Length: 108
Length: 122
Image 1 (cartoon, rainbow over the protein chains, first blue to last red):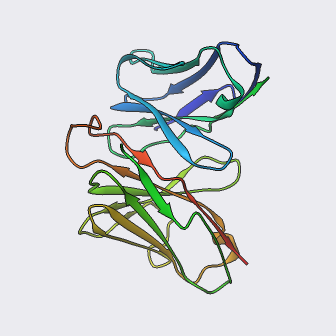
Image 2 (tube, rainbow over the protein chains, first blue to last red):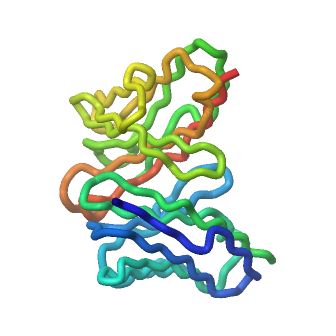
């Protein structure tokens, strides 16, 4: 069964803190997406990765295929990073399976 | 690049009316687009996969006669909610997958999301 688990569900941190959001999945995947959803609802695709590590600005995404685990890191967090972060693997086809999301709140 | 738009962003309608939502890929072609709906504080749920020039593939439990999908061109897919009822009130989001195996926007599995349409049925 294709399952995705994210942790934590909710995370509140002070501005400047290093943030880690975790995603575990049950079976092999072809790729994994990290998405950001702001309070207005719009979704931004942050990363798509199938191995290793990707970096974009203050955001870093890593994936360990053997352990079926991915992490999203935010360095020097800022209140504008407050959003819901969603992990979404492709389980061997074009459809995405969505995690329940991590609600991140960064306090100034 | 890789911008997807949706129109309208917000719509309020009376029960029994039909509402059409458009999803456009602005700077790339998309043979495949996806339609999702999201209830408050819940995950996105895939409704259907829209393929240009052919019938959409609906997920189990989604009524194809209620949620009509048309993907008439490589840059436009529409979702029509027919005879809308209050329980259809939701946030509808589309995504588009660039045509081709690789290229400017990366690999086969890449998807780009629209900003969403909030539907309220009174």
